[in-house]
Length: 234
Ligand code: NDP
Image (cartoon, rainbow, N blue to C red):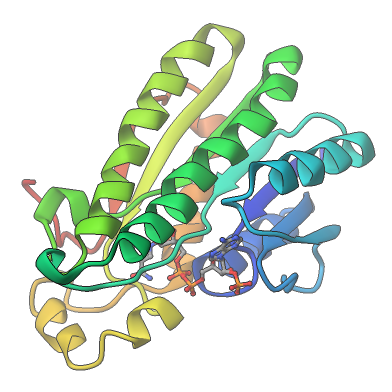
């Protein structure tokens, strides 16, 4: 049966691959992005800033009116704004936390009531291995992704008895616009990946699809590194 799936950060990279995965399964996929872009085949698309709680609430309300309770929410929208901490501006810190952590909370909060009422649902946050290994120049980003784990596990306990699961997928180095910016630092990171290759967005989409499936119905509060072994042991 076709599910109501909402994906934030749907326009490109990992989010677009996640949308395509669920579209292929025949689900009603609703894509959210700043630009209002999303893969063709999405049932509906909203242009919004996830850091603005009002616009998130409005979009999800409208999606729920059209497609019913949210069955799968993938919180994927994220940004980087790198710089060494000693020189990091307030704005650099705040903007990353606002999108990656505030935006994640606003998205989950807007979807949860409909899931709890339906006594079923799956929330999947796209985190990162950065809080496990520490990344110089990414104090803001790693802090935001560490925060997602505390958020996800607390929500998981709040809604576990209502049939809703909450998990985190923590990608390693994935080939998207976000990592194109890394330039030559990418080669040094590649040397840290036991599997010897950079991940593709589809590698993450498959894991998200699994966590949203009935096969994963007994998994909640998990953090699943999907990184070719990069953060193994951390
Ligand atoms: P991209 O930069 O390729 O895409 C980012 C997506 O997020 C775009 O769809 C963008 O929309 C959307 N977005 C950004 N800010 C906002 C906002 N304020 N409101 C709404 N949408 C927003 O990133 P990736 O695909 O690489 O990353 C996706 C997720 O995976 C992120 O959370 C990232 O932190 C995480 N991740 C990525 C890794 C990697 O190696 N690539 C590694 C670990 C984690 P628009 O196009 O409209 O601007």
